[in-house]
Image 1 (cartoon, one colour):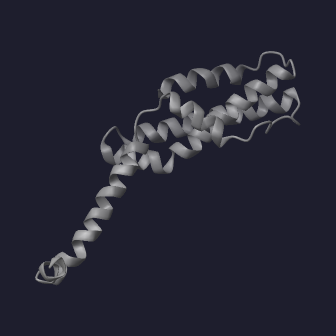
Image 2: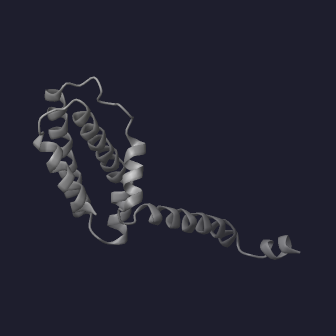
Length: 137
């Protein structure tokens, strides 16, 4: 009986209803990704960065890498702000910029751990990156 009722719908309605349902489900899933950062963002950052990624770096190399990460983080923050606070801007940011930003946050966490393990003197970019993390939250 259900098939008979479905066959009475015009051809366009039969093809658009499943597509509309899939699009609505996809939009709902992506909107969850576009939410504000929080504690889950830190765990995702740790997941996105390989453990002991910088173990072979010396202190000078750690400082150089930290400075480049902070620069790129600031660029991404500007791009995310430019995308706008609306739903479309948040969706664009979540898809385009957020994965790289989260990966860079994970790299900064690993850089801090490695610098502490190697007893490096204070690296200014590591402290600057920490304030950058707070700005996005």
